[in-house]
Structures are given as C-alpha cells and as structure tokens.
Image (cartoon, rainbow, N blue to C red):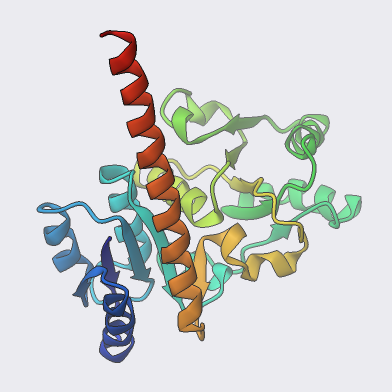
Length: 255
C-alpha cells in the first residue's frame, strides 16, 4: 500500500518508514504540510499518518484538506498531545469542556447557561437518545440548538441558532475538522462535537483511545501502527474481492 508520513521528527518518520517497508509498503515521508500537499497532487495514498505540530500549516489543517480531496485515504493524527491539547494547538481554543452521561444535571444546566462564552465542547454519546435529550435541555432553557452532520454544514442559516450540535459517526478528529470548516466560513457559534463511536468505554478515559479520537498518541508501540496498516489492508482486499465478485455476477447476468 502507499503510505504517507508527515512528521518533522526525522528519527520517528524514518523509523516508521523502515518498519513499514519491511512489509513491502511504499512509504513517502515529508516534514511539513506544504510538501505533503504537493505529493498528494500527483498520487493517492491509501493511509496517511500526520503529526499535529508541523512547521507552517498544522497537522489538523492538513488532515482536513486531505479528507476533502482524497476521501478514500485512511487518515490518522499522531501526536504527543491529548485530544484537548490538539484542539488548542489547531484552533487556539483553551479549556475545552467534556460532556457525557456521567455529567450531572446541574453541570449541564450551568454549561448551557454559559454556552455563549464556550466556543467548543466535546460530548461522548452513550445511548441513541443522548443527542435529542441534550437538545431538549437547550429548548427548555430557551436556547435554540441545531443538530447537523457533516453533509449538512452549508444547508442552514446558522446565524438563527444559539448552539450547533455537530453529530458525527466518525472520530472526534473528523468532527474537529468540520468545526474548523465552519470557523473558516466565518461562523463563531458555540458548537458541541458529538461522537457516537461505539467503543465500550464511554467515560472521559475514552478520549485517549484511537477508536474515539482517531489519534495515535505518543509514545506508542510500532506494533500498533503495523496493526492499523494490516487491518486496513485486509479491509481493502475484502472490498476489492467483493467488487470483483459483484462485477463477475453482473457480467454473467448480461451474457
């Protein structure tokens, strides 16, 4: 597979390249986002591992661009930061609150009362009705919420709402890039990023997991990277085989 590594830590990048090349993957290394984007104009990568802190454009901005231009690429952030630190590094927003179903009612009420001064909140959905219950709480307190997903970002007059509840079936890093897209369009409405990923542990501890955040946190074991690559390769092979099988069936049916 074609793998992109963008990291200004030369030793780390070279180490990842060496171990991935042993498994016969084609690995391209870049130490800044700008050079990586030039490479993306000429080839499509199967997987990209991107560090957050890069000279010039940061890794989350690069992540967002690749997500929009190469949606078939599997993207991962690699960082020594935690998710709240990644948010601060990429957006400048400090002290991001975190909500989940362990958050008591008084804390939620206080949060809603102060929502105008809170640009961004993370929330972990634990049950299917979590989002609607959160929205109802806003309505009860005379706040107008808008629940949207990434496909609906430009389909509403966002200025009519007091808060955006940005739901995503993807990881929080994907939701963060959607939030940044809204900010880049000039919308500064308080936003709650919801992740509905089913990972078993829905406490705040889950914010340190790859499954919820989409981030690989340093220090990590190289076996973790190899496991990710192997899993993606297997999935792609299954998808390819299923596509071939379907095409064969179609050809047979028309002969």
